[in-house]
Image (cartoon, rainbow, N blue to C red; front, side, top):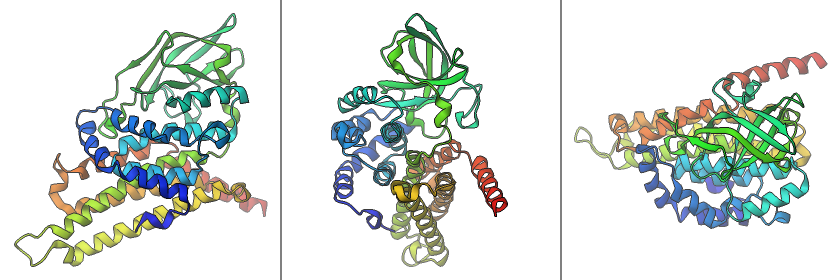
Amino acid sequence: MSKNLFIKTDIQREWIEKLLKHEEAFKSEAKESDEKSKFPKKNIQTLVDMGYTKSILPKEYGGEGLRVTDMILFQETIASFDGATGLAIGWHQSVVGELFEKKLWENHKLSSFAKKILNGALVNRAASEAQTGSPTRGGRPGTYAVKKGDKWIISGQKTFTTMAPVLTHFLVTAWVEEKEAVGTFLIEREAKGLSIKETWDVIAMRGTESHDLVLDNVEIEEENFVEPNQESKSNNLNGWLLHIPACYLGIAQAARDYAVKFASVYSPNSIKGTISELPNVQSLIGQIDLELMKARHFLYSVAEAYDDESRRSYITNELNAAKHIVTNSAINIVDKAMRVVGAKSLQLSNPLQRYYRDVRAGLHNPPMDDMTISKLAQTAIKEIKKK
């Protein structure tokens, strides 16, 4: 199934054409990035130079005012070239999209930060901690902020800081004792006491270099206390997190394309023609494309509903369901693609083994599958009780 079916605007077409020009360069970077667990700095810098990282800003702040539907189309495309690049830059796009859509900060703070983004700044949230696990489960952060005069002193350690090697700004959640709430602080990379501890040793998304962020009595201005009550927005809809399933959908598409191409040219001497003519191989390819269609249509349908303000209020669990459906479909698609290719798919030189490892990471990105299923059940029970 072609993604062209989902290209509906001139800006979408223009950006897809620009991204496609870098397909081979991104793909060549992906192999080395994975093997050496090395961040794809060239790919990210290319996206910054293209203006991609500022395109997400609203037009009044100097950007192109991209919507969630635009974002997932572009993120899926980038991830089909390189999953690590897609997931990494997706966090920046998602954070900026949410900040300005919801106007989470005071306007003068947003205006000041927009100027930094226009000049190439890269940002991600730093919320996860070893002791609390995923912040979506509600654990109180061990990172804490203490007021000292007109400054804030912050100490703690954050895990899974994706894009750590190139981030210029970190949005750090910390427990603010005097407010008895979780707050968010904007901290620049050059801040004294901030360091990156290289801890990333996983087998999936190796290139993201999602190291630990260490804060040792980091002193920041009152102005940088940007979100005084993080919990106040915890239950609000955030369609920008759809960059996560978009990433894994892109990887699944890449696996599908590789398997179909392989089947179309591989011809063992035990058969006439290529394996693409075998009924069992055609069955696998058909199942792959059906799975892709289901996942993609669901994802884009939910994104369009989110972008439509007249329909957004009717969304309940669709955002979480989209992540659940797409990430699990991606795992299934890559598995079937490997069955088409056979044992060759396990060779380190074969990209399928990287896709296999990378899509597995989707299960551990928020929201988790068990939480999604639980919320679906709770919503169904609550609605039936109202009748």
